[in-house]
Length: 397
Image (tube, rainbow, N blue to C red; front, side, top):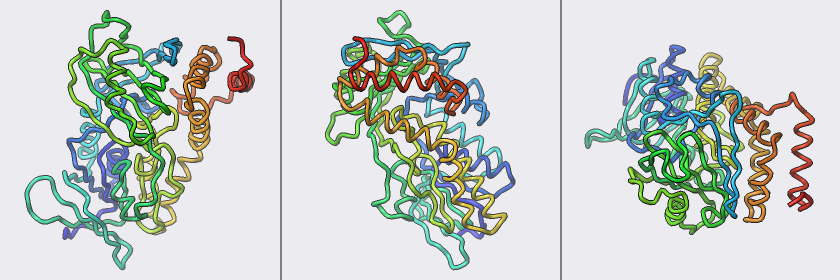
């Protein structure tokens, strides 16, 4: 076992874990980052300006700048939602973005190991011993001791299972996508500056399908929580409908997306969860990168405070701070998904509702800035009224 005592051992080097390790190292804390490496997560790759600003994401990592979203209904009716005032959503490739985040954490002073988490043991002095099987070599697992562990190891988090048991897990949507070589802009309806979001029961009976351009490549995929739904076949249909069936497939990936924050992220002693492990992927949209990075930052803050104050209750602050700022948004998005994604009739009404200027403006302002917009209460009232009209079938056809 290593004789070093780390302030934090971070398991998982995606956006949550790499951000946590980076922030701790910048504060002069001893952080060890453990990641399996080489397995990018299925992800649309969208990051809002708030993420670019808050986490100092350099422009060279953006493979595309999206200036509009096209909503596609079951009847193939479309609504283009254009971002005003020269705004954009940045797109990243996870197989480039995640390694860059890990490299940045290491450059800030975090130690780094390519390996797989094997288990943890709590010690009598309050520290934790973590067992890691290194990727290189066939030797026995190594042990590392830390004051705290940050479990940022994905939706199926082994850290979460080790601490809370297998029954503690959020509800999932299973996602699958294919990274294809992007066609020329003149090829059919494909637009390299627009994300297409497809609401159709054939593509997803309870979520949506997507076509998200990344510059040279494009993510095409779909998600569903319904066991047995054939995501690969649905993605094939989506590619055909979008005129992308002949594009070269560069790789394909699948993984669960957790769509509800867990009620508890820490064990009250020395472990705290972050990112997908804590369930922080936004319902309805499936957005996860910004929330993962924020979760990693809040976990790092909580661990640093725990070390300084010698008070394990500090770990609770990670979830408390996250939910204070974003809990209401997650609640509203969960309601929206429950109501509008239920069947094709509801999906048709939802896309129709997206034509409304108030809906578009409030949607983009909330998404880009990551906060509910309160400066125009009448707009919220108008949207609520139109929402009810659509739901009750009272709006004009």
